[in-house]
Image (cartoon, rainbow, N blue to C red; front, side, top):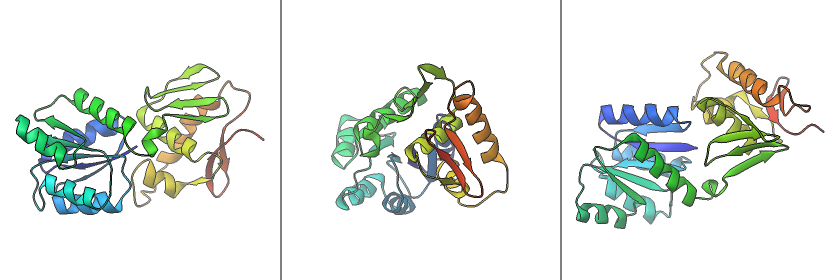
Amino acid sequence: MKLLVIEDDRETAAYLVKGLGESGYTVDHTSDGRDGLFLATSGSYDAIVLDRMLPGMDGLALLGALRGAQIRTPALILSALGSVDDRVKGLRSGGDDYLVKPFAFSELLARIEVLLRRGGEAASVTRLRVADLELDLLTRSVKRSDKTIELLPREFQLLEYLMRNAGHVVTRTMLLENVWDYHFDPQTNVIDVHVSRLRQKIDRNFDRPLLHTVRGAGYCLRAAE
């Protein structure tokens, strides 16, 4: 799942990016309203976390522009303005939820999960399955043949991407851009290490391997033929 955070306060932004990344999300961040509008209209995001008071363009104006362009990406507004009138104005401007600063990260995470459950075509899929391997996006759990498999956040994100592209070859570039959010090759073996660890967890002690290396191309998650 990919999130866009539009927040100009450095400490708050760093807190959000770090916490959401550790929770398994891919996060893009900008501190400017106009840049945020550009990203929101040109990128593919499952949800937006939006500060109300922004340089360049106010958060509510940004939302109005998005909704006017028929972009329905779920948006959670963050603001120190917490009166009933402020919250109503935010929701009527196109926000799907409104959270007053300061906030508990656990509450923000829960609100994002609710938005993802109810908004957008991508969020309508809550379970992914390949052969006897099942991934639950709501509980963030993985099972194979009813055996629970414990994954780290990045491993979960990697598996989710592979399962969404099951049966197709996924290249190194695709993984760098969609799982690590790199738009360049950092020339490290980070992908090889994570794929190897994931393979050990989902294939070891099972009869059929599911995660295959396609020599010279990338990786493919598929049931054995």
